[in-house]
Length: 113
Image 1 (cartoon, rainbow, N blue to C red):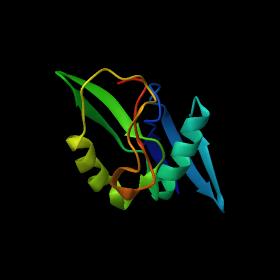
Image 2 (cartoon, rainbow, N blue to C red):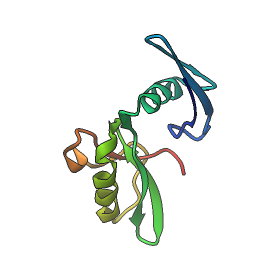
Image 3 (tube, rainbow, N blue to C red):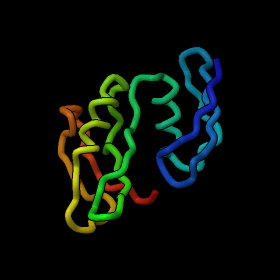
Image 4 (tube, rainbow, N blue to C red):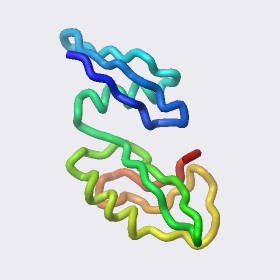
């Protein structure tokens, strides 16, 4: 079984080809180690990193969960992200919400849009 996935872990947006051969999951097309991990998790359909935007005055800043969360929790995390407001500019990697929606993942500021 093969699956094509666009990785959202970094700005590269690699086009991954993920396939399962026996018990092994093979990821091709990743340009960084994060793509390898993301491709495997997405293929298995168990966990994903949630991305979004948070208001900072009139601007929006990109955010994401620090670790992958169960796909069943994505909607709750997305709703929680919509309620977050930042009053001053923050640097990439800053934790905005610890343990968002009781998932065990923190909401952090992403590196880019």
